Image (spheres, rainbow, N blue to C red):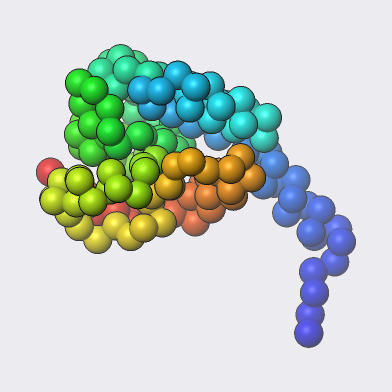
Length: 155
């Protein structure tokens, strides 16, 4: 078995850390305490985070190429997370997106989910409540492995 040398492992860790420090995340959740917790948790790990509790305000401030990942709550007033996803993808089809949801909410939005992106699996959903360590793990997985091309968005 071949194992990487400690120099290579250290170099890989440094590259990952640099990528995280440069990565910008948009969080949109109508619950201020969830926004605050996610923002602090992600910033503590080196991410740059913008958080909005109003989906329309988030959309108004969204710019193509600004974010590497967008984390959207599904159930929000004015515009749900899937509707916001659809509008964001019109502006930046390359941004990675995942959804925060309580398990029972996902079933309520199943027809809309299938219409917007029929081939996306559960890996694009983060169930609330979630522990900080698990959130960081899921965000890192999204940042490193999933491209927006995997979600075949239907206009």
